[in-house]
Length: 369
Ligand SMILES: [Zn+2]
Ligand SMILES: [Zn+2]
Image (cartoon, rainbow, N blue to C red; front, side):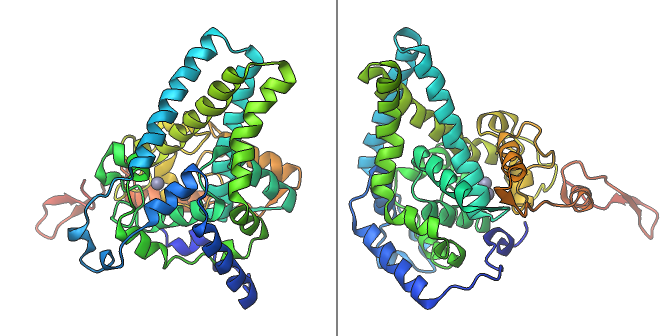
């Protein structure tokens, strides 16, 4: 797997002033003191760890501590979403259903084109209007603030399938899908997370603003707006708006994103690197607007397309290309054809097994599964 310095993008020439850093630190601590919204406070709760939990022996000592408040909230959210599906087919207006789908698509783009490919991996650059738009639609997705999302994801890439991976897929489908949000983080996640360079994120005013005002932003963008728009624009009922456009939409988007952490780390092919767990998963590709080419993505995390095949089955790449055409996105990074081919031949699951004659004349293979 390529070094994370590529993913971090922190080897850029950005200069972080001392004042900016200290200001951000103040902002960070004030944010963590606030009660926060559901997932924000959830995350703070998950971050809690006793000091003596963090030591070299943490792997053997770690005991899973369930955060029951999160269990209850996620259980309610899923029940509310199921009721939302019922309402979708029985009483909500078609405009509400279309609006729900569009909001779902936008919120997924906020995660994939925004928090993931732009802020976490720095795989392309965006001008301010696009950054603001991406921050807005990412807030609709309600997956914590940009800084926290990008930090966790960098830790995921650097320590994939270890105790330091926030959603370590070797702990099973349930844990990597949703379980990791229902218990306190493994001490290694906290420990390694503190060592990740996040200076590029601290230097971004949009990220700073988003973190500072996350609570009012997320209440407005993820709950109030999606509920009020159908009610005031086409006279939808409050119940249909709340359970279809808000609860169902939120729950559905969350699960689509989580499948990248769970299914795409378990099932599928590994044409680029057979030595890592992430896979190419067709179902996740379709559901997560182009993020299911996960073996490729973990092999070439700096590629803005997150796929060898460009815009093919990749709505996020298509969106970024449109933004580039409009002049709002630029410096899109990609892996070269030769680099991809070389990597496939060297570590892919379909790499040729080249016979190498031994001195004694008995053939063997250069690489074996
Ligand atoms: Zn990634
Ligand atoms: Zn992954």
